[in-house]
Image (cartoon, rainbow, N blue to C red):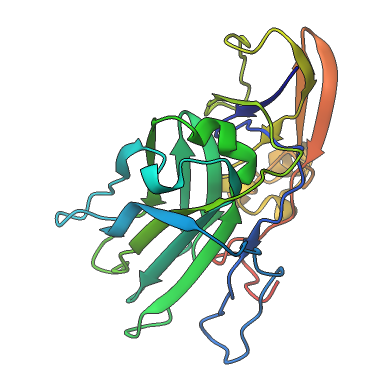
Length: 276
């Protein structure tokens, strides 16, 4: 009996198995009182191996153009599995001036991480680490997979901050958790409305869990301040963002509604009220 975890990528991606994903201490650049949003990811004792996906990889090339890290992720021979846990550590350091940017990590066509950055506080580097439990993707990690990722960044004479990124996966040997899927399949898309043909799935599925990653830009970055369409139309010169402050992602299968997800109320560090 197989249990599959399809991952619908960039606009729509997969979720359903609760995991202990968490961020390392988040240090707001203008305070000496750091805050950790969640408990740290636990790590089993015993044998483990670490594989590096990016080693001090700069978000921008010397000419200022954005660049991604990429390669092939192969399970470490010294820790061939099974694994009790797989943990990703994404460490970033940046100085100078920069706004919030976003980045991701995609393994085998499946989005396994998406997140935004801290803003640097000046000449001194701002360094932070995001840690995520990737155990639910173990089925994807058992064989060599192409990967790519990185922070999409823009530089100029004003925005000088460049992100130094180190990304590792640590494989902890041991008995796998009972809820790890037997298969993981990604369906990446970057459109407001995405249509997929669910091909390549196991034929003896007993349960399917879906993850969805939503990425908002432009007026959707600060959706909480968007006004109704009739208000925007009444004041065309004001440049008001429209469609109101409510956001929802709907999913259907063969024409039947299966899920509706409200957009998580996050605010980018470049938001109109940073203290929120």
